[in-house]
Amino acid sequence: MRWTKFLLLLLLPSWLFAQNETNIINTYSNAVNDSVIAWRRHFHQFPELSNREYNTGAYIAAYLKKLGLEVQYPVAKTGVVAILKGSKPGPVVALRADIDALPVVERVQLPFASKVTGEYEGKKVGVMHACGHDSHIAILMGTATVLSKMKNVLPGTVKFIFQPAEEGTPDNEEGGAPLMIKDGVMNNPKVDAIFGLHINSQTEIGKIKYKSGATMASSDWFTVKVNGKSSHGSQPWSGIDPIVIAAQIIQGFQTIVSRQEELTKAPVVITVGKINSGVRSNIIPETLTMEGTIRTLDSKMQQDVHERMKRTAEKIAEASGANATVSIDTKTEVTYNNPELVKETLPALELAAGKDNVSTMDWTTGAEDFSFYGDKAPAFFFFLGGMPKGMDPAKAPPHHTPDFYIDDSMLTVGVKAFCQIVFQYAKMHPIKTL
Image (cartoon, rainbow, N blue to C red):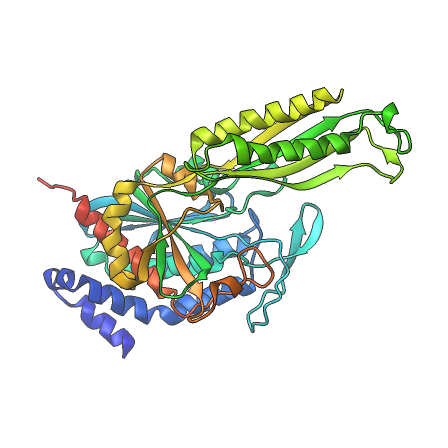
């Protein structure tokens, strides 16, 4: 019966089809719901690490080819790009999903829980979709299914981007959004606007949250190397202790946050997550290396923090007769939602989820390499709820943890949102024909 409705809808004249656009999107999206859930659970059960998404990419590409789309595979090693050309003139809209999993051992008791293992930094690890990228894949596949059935009334071109390695590449390999862009995904045809979504385990299902302007932080990874002088642990005056110096540097970094940056403009986070020094408890080591991350939501503040960190580490070390070097590697930029694009897109989100289920959010210090696409075209990145109804958000397991869990029963809200966005953007940016 469900597919009979599809066939009847396809026989409708174009003008009537357009009048019932929202109803048709809803009908098609509801019909593909079971498939979206099945896809999500398949990818959850068989996750793959960044730049190693071989089976994932092949599975996606094979399905999109069945839909009759123009498929490019592989792109950026394991990614997939598919193009759907509508029957009406219009802009080029890109929709993006990330496809990689994390080196996490799953603890959630599910019939489709991951039992997969892989290799990460030379170690055997569990592999889990602990950030919800499996749901992103399924939502975008569902969107491609719905829009391909609406091709006869679709304005413009839709580019479906399935991107690997959002979580970062192993061994400093190229990958992620920068490599997708390098491989030309924002061109041929040139993208006029790009949209992405992220599931959120602490937002109730059926709800959408968004923020205009700076939304997610830049992510910088830093390394500090301190060179001191080795000595016996009982005679610290005979050496220069890099561990004590490192402790002072860490405190100095925190005063950059608490006393030097204007936090009323945007938040700043500096976290040292790893320290390596010494081999024995009674020997003062000669060297120390520590690593961490910087999160900022303003590009000028980001550069200012970099300069202050380098100066702080160098001067503290110098005061003790040591020397310190700081290297900083920018992994992602600030994810910035174009304010005008957000304003134009809001009606689409409200049609998809209901006006009462769409709300603004605060910025987050989490990071996303979706940010790089925003350098090439106006971009909008929003969040879709995955938390079971009635659950306390404070008790919902966060992302990147072994207990991460989402309710996948309403992923089609994401499908509806993407579909509505395509039509809404075309209405706001019509292509005039002679």
